Amino acid sequence: MSNLVVGNIEAASSGRLSLGKTFGSWTVDSFVDGTDYLAATDLFVCAYISVGNQTAFAIDGYTDSAASPTTLLVRDAANYRADGGNTTFVTYGSISFPVKKGDSWRVESHVISAASGPTDLVINTMAFGA
Image 1 (cartoon, rainbow, N blue to C red):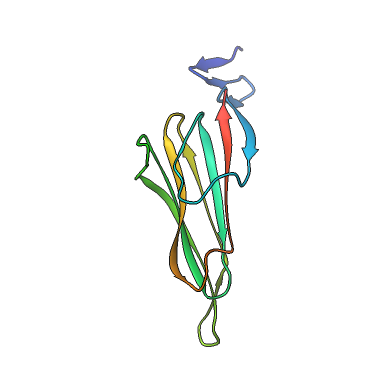
Image 2 (cartoon, rainbow, N blue to C red; image 1 turned 180 degrees about the vertical axis):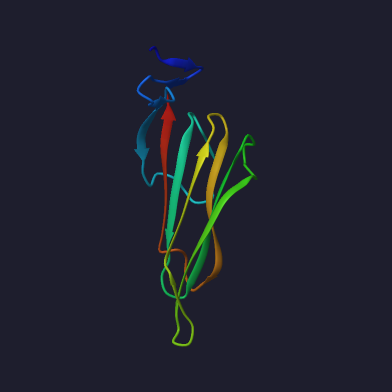
């Protein structure tokens, strides 16, 4: 039995499915909060925030064909508050979303309440190409 090929999708007689694409390398912690980027290839964006005491932040992921994207795809939040009477410990938040080649994307954090900024915001990408 031969393989069935439709576009870039291949279904082998073994039952395995191939998309005809592979993952590229990670680009780790090389992006700036709130900055618009143009995708040179299809890619995945993964980002996380870590917050310290008395802080609460949200992290948002945007992508579309505009130079400054307005389509919000994903959002998460982290809150760490230890003031005796009200204790909340959700110290990490993360998002992941795909971006099409030629589209723009942005990750940005937003203050919910804070004595200071996020302890850490890391934005990573992995290309997805032929």
